[in-house]
Image (tube, rainbow, N blue to C red; front, side):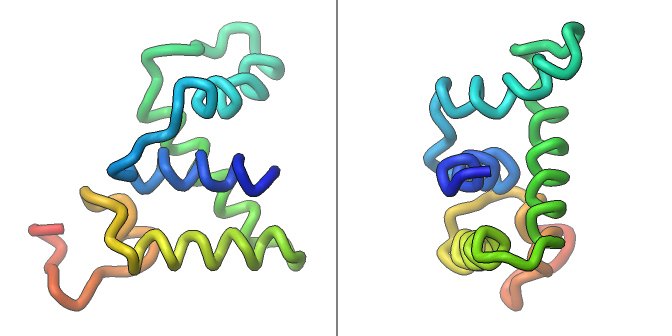
Length: 103
């Protein structure tokens, strides 16, 4: 997983205000398509969200520079407010200025 792959996954999982590009989404989807010919390349946004989140979780289990960089990127995205919805808050923990119903 390259730094660009981590950024694209973060944009998907955190529903960033600046979404990932079409090329970025294709790069995310292609390994799944390569592994499973029946994998849809379009119309599966929620599935891609979950798969990107799982990929980031696996990345964080590693003990290398890429994992540290990924952890920093997740923290930065959360603290920088580049997210909306509840997904990012559930990954990084609730912000002090919101409750579970209004995030």
